[in-house]
Length: 279
Image (cartoon, rainbow, N blue to C red; front, side, top):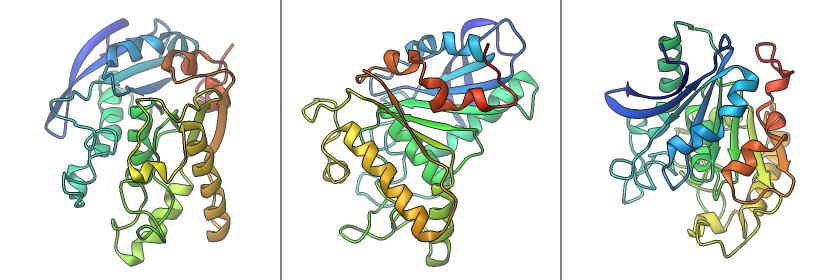
């Protein structure tokens, strides 16, 4: 069992061991909140930021550490889909696989096989979860991408007609599977959660890769354009569109501001869940 209050445990997922920072309220647990840190790799701090939310929603928090020694930017931020040379890796090696595996680990710890889970990522964590939503397509209730520097665009092919992975969905699947996977991504319960003031095009931590710059000039712009592209693609394909766009008023590039905002309830859609009720 995960201990009450704040703690630190180790989880071995597909043979890889992670330090996982946890929090568990005293009340009976009604769900799981998986928290993904930014470039700072401060998983413990991210866990702390989520404590108030965990108490309100009766959620057990699990914040895994993706350390720099084992998970470079291409392995964490961009989901581990490609190697140093930009070549697609086997799906069994993608870092994205650890998200559903962590949810199963928490369920096993809590002896609750059907416990629902939500995912939250800010900045680099949001970039990572964008790849999770596109390529892993897990069964989480909602995946929140807060202030990401880049997204997986719902495009096949390669630039300029499309966008290749890990910035698009091109070059990953065989022809017959591509549209099915694209439809699945558009139908995922994704929230693009933007700070209304996270709009500095000169932010030194803003990804300036050519593929990122094609998405927009700053984070807010990139999120809005990605959401609008998703809407257009879903309409063109005639498929369900599960994404939503939520703003945190006055929010900057701050995990604390974004998760403390009342708008986080809209972003996670916790208040609409039959399992989680806010008072």
